[in-house]
Length: 233
Image: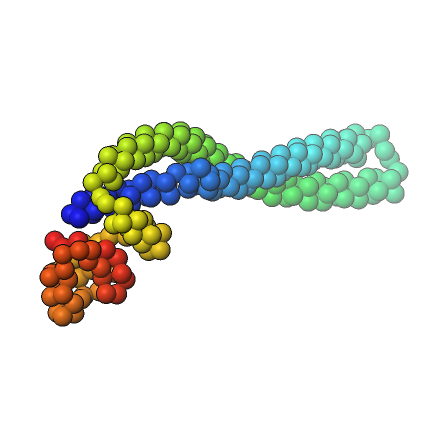
């Protein structure tokens, strides 16, 4: 009977290993990491697209400002080189120069806004790129670790099952059948130690009368609360 706890621990060990194997084979941990990586990659992609758009717009505005500056220079040349003598035409040229300068100022202000947006985006880019690189490495390491752990679990399960096969020959069929039935009913725990009057399966303290009866019992002892097989310690 004393070795029944040894069998119970072997079985619990196998149960834990099998549960872990199911977790690994389901790929939930890996899939969660992949989702994290995908979310950051999407944010990085959106930032890069937005940055490309800002860079193009900044370039277009700077080209427009340069074009307006060239027009202003040409109009001012006409204004002061003596080629135009008509007062009304000179007045018209002055008005055009003013309009061109106003347009150029607005374009330059907008270009400055785009430049500030670009600097902000370029400042955020390395952080996101670093986060993506780190998540990719973590994912790769998790995949490698999962593969190694699955192999280790397989080896450990085989070893414990072989040890179990050698151990079960020490128990009579009636006890073993009861133990297996209880394991199926009691979340994998069919036998428990009775320590200081407390069942280690359900953690209930047995009455003094029940403890006395159990101690005088020569056969299979069972907890009055959870009905697991009790092993006196």
